[in-house]
Image (cartoon, rainbow, N blue to C red; front, side, top):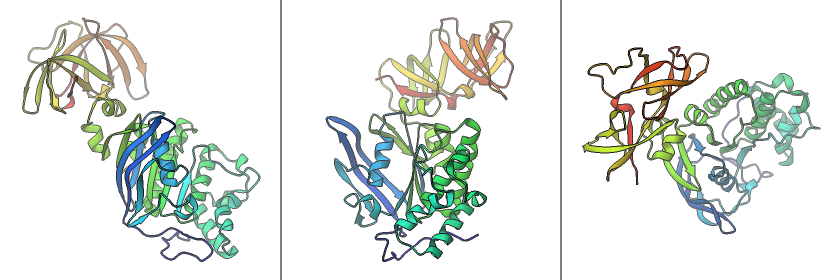
Length: 376
C-alpha cells in the first residue's frame, strides 16, 4: 500500500499545507451569535496525534467549536495556536486541516476517485501525485475497487468512507469530523466506528470528533470534552468521565440514568451515607457535600438484580432496595427493567436475568458504584 506521509515542506502551489506540530491550543475560544453565546471560553490543549471527542446534546456548542477550529466561523474572543503560530486569523484553506461533514457533501456527478482527488486538483498538483495520493487514500478506506463508481451507487457507509478519504488525501495535520456517523443505521455506525479507529491508528493524525453519542466518544477518544450550553463541564479520559463524572450533567451524559435526590445523613471523608423513603445507600462523594439533601447517581448495569418472591430484604445486605418490575425491555443479551419501590420511586436496572413484569425483585449495588453529588 502506498503510504500517506506527514509533510514538512509546503508545495509552492499549495500555500500552507499540513505540518508536523506538537500542540494545538484553544485559548478562551468564544463564539456569539447576536446576543447568544454559543461557546464560552473553551480552553483546550491537544497533543499531536491525539483523538479528542467533543460530546454533548444538540446546541451545546460542540459543532461551533469545531467550525471555529476549521476557520468556518470567526472567533468572538480568544485565540487558536498551532505551536507558536496563531491560526484563528488565517483563512480555512491555509490551516491545512481536513474536514468530514455529517452529510458527506460529495459531488454526485463525479466518480469516487474524482471526489477524493478534487482538493488535490484544486491545488494544481501533478496528475502523477494526485493518482498516488488518491490510490493511497482509497486503499486506506478499503474502497479501491469502487474508484470509478458514482457516489449514488454506494451505501451510506461507503459514502462516508469516501468523505474520509477526501479529507485525509490532502495529508492534513488535523482531521475534523462533525457527527460523521449520525446518518447511518446502527450496524453501519458500529462498523464505521471501527474503521475510524483503524484509520486514526494507521495515520496517527490529530483528530477532533463531534458527537452526541457517549458510546462513540468512549470507544474512539483519548480524551473527551463534555459541553453543555456553550460551557465546558469536564475534560478527561474516557475512564475518568465514566467512573468519576464531575457533576450531575456529565453523569447523565455518561449513562447514569438513576439520579435520586435523598437525605444526606453524614459524610465520613469520601464515604457518604444517604437515606431514601424505603432504603439506605452508602456511596462515594464526588464533590463537597453540604446541607440536608444530596443526589445519588447509579448506572442501570451497576445493579445486581435477583428475584425475591418472599418480598423481604436479605439479612445483612448493604445498599439493598426492594421493588416490583414494571416495564421489561428485551435488549438481546440482557433486559432493561423499570422497577418501582414501595414509595413509588422508579429505578432503571439492566440484567441478564429474565424478569417478568410484576415480579418482586431485590436490587443491590456496590458502594463504589453509588456517586453522590451536591443538591445545591
